[in-house]
Length: 433
Image 1 (spheres, rainbow, N blue to C red):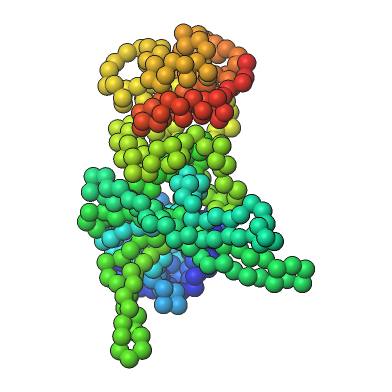
Image 2: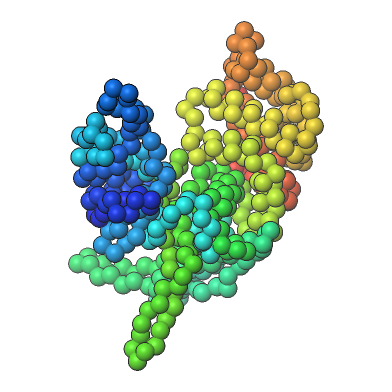
C-alpha cells in the first residue's frame, strides 16, 4: 500500500474534550505511528501519606484513540506508548510530546468499543485470489487477425455460497481501458480485480471478519503453495451515505471504513501472480461453491494445526530445525484434530500418511516407516532430548512432511485424486536426498 499521512486532533473516546494535535503516519507495510503535541498521561500515581505521589512508569495500553483529519474520522486500535517527554511528575498534566504505536487503524469511522457489532459486510482483496478463481473476466487474441488484435473486459455474474448463515461472494471490479500516449509509444491497459464480499447474517464486529479473512488467506495459501496475504479490507457501516443530486434527487451508497494494520506477511499486490500450472488446485478443479464450505469445515475443525502450518508460510523460519519442529507439531496436532484419539507420535505420523492415496503419497514419501521413524527421532531430539541426536537430511525431511500435510488438507476438502496426483508430480515433488 502507499504511505499515508493524516494531520488532525486526537482523543480518548472517554475524554472527547481533551484533544491533542498530531500526525498519524501509515507506512507501506501498514505500520502505524502517531506523534502528538502534548499527549495522554499513561502513568500510575499513588498518593503518599507525607504528601507527593509514587509514580509508576509501566505504561498503560490505550485500547482506542479517536481522531479527526480534514473531515475523516479515524479510530486507532490497541495503542502503546513508544516515547513521551515532559509532564510526568505533575498531576493532571500529560507529556509535552508523545509517540504512540497502534496495532490497527479504522479509517472512516469512530468506535467507542472494539467489540461493537455494527458492520454489515466487508469487501476483501487477497493476493492470488484472481489466479485461484480463474474467472475469464479478461480475454485477448494471441495474434493479429486481419491486422487487428483484440482485448476485452467482461462483466461476469457473481458467484456466491452461504455457510453457517454467512454469504461469501466473488466478483470482479472492472476499470475500463485506459489509453496513454507517450513520446515513444501508445499504451492501452485494462484492469479486472477480483474481490470477496463477506455478508454476515447480522451485523458483526471486527474480530468476526478477522477470522473469516484469515480462513480465506489460509485457503489461498494452501492452493498456491505460497503466502497469500490480505491486500485490503473495507467494512460497511450501519448508515448509508446520502448523496444529493440535481432537482432534489438522492443517491444512497454504503458508508464505508478501511481497516489497516501491519501484518506478519506484507501483501505485494503488484508482484507477479502464481502461474496456473504452479497452483496445487484452483476453482477450475473444484468450484468455489464447493471448495469454500468444505475448506471452512476443515479449517474450523483443525484451527490449531492450521495456525501452526500456515504461520510457517507467512513468516518462514530461517532455520531448518525450526521449520521441521513446527511441521512435526502440525502432524501431531492435525491427527488429534481429525481423529480425537490418543496415540504415539509415530503412530500419528503414519496414520496421517494414510489419508491421501497411497500412490500419491508414494511420489513424495517412498518409505512411510522410515519417514515416520526419522520424523519422530528428529522431533524428540529437537523438542525433548538433545542426547537422542538429530540425523542429517533435515531439509528433505521437512519438505516431505509439509508436502504430505498439504495433501492431507486437499484430501479432507475433497480435491480429486487426479488433481492431487498432478500437484504431487509437478508442484510438491521433493527431489532431495
